[in-house]
Length: 341
Image 1 (cartoon, rainbow, N blue to C red):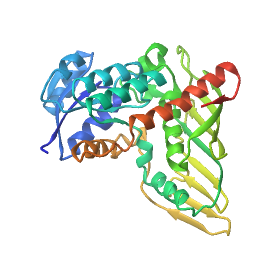
Image 2: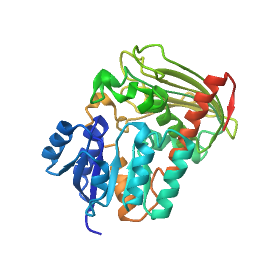
Image 3: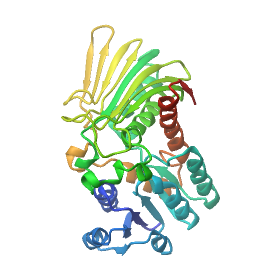
Image 4: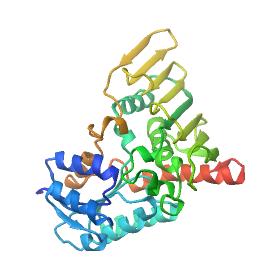
């Protein structure tokens, strides 16, 4: 197949720091067009990459030269734009969370099947070397029985990262649907499902707005999660960590404690029951602080799935299962009950 010709819909920070540069780096792709409602913004990106500019995603999708699109819009538009793109015969890479409801996610999955096109969700944490290694250690039984885990994803909030700063859609419930739990928490529900190789069956959660003013979405969430095999642990997602970003995960197992992205130098530290400590420098996780200079592998995996006609590394179904944990957390917070998935 010749180069995959792509369009990027939504020219905010994730497109600027991740999708556009990573498509540009991939020798099997050619960026054809960009789209954003803000004309000034889209024209700047079109000029930078030497591509077509659209302010209407429908017009972009009507371009027969485009084979695939990245959907980098506010959360509430993920489903409608992805479905329109699939129906227009384009492969779709959609930012996380996949959608704002299970029903919308199911419709996206169905649309991909009907169109016989690829749908991938941009959960980049799966591709971090330390996370891949941890999954291997668990899958091949090296750690013995897994008892528990503790994971966190927190930073100072989207105003430091989003294209619109404090005016960002991230803070508006009608556009974001959910705050830190949807922005950061869903990354971790996806990561834990990937590393542990199990589905979550029960969730209890407290979801609060405590740090940010002038917003109607959560900025701090703490969840207790239980897998089908009885592994229990906690997940914290927050926009209230005012100093260094925390993106750590700790796995407590029969034979060792595994610390992921918890040490500034060693991305994976295994503390064995025997007293032995093994440290791996596997290359860090992508952070907003690194200026997006690292490759997340999301684009490369998506392009590979399309060109080689393989199943996407993070399918629509996977995205939906990770979303369901987040939806259950919201329900638990509202009902003050443990919610079964």
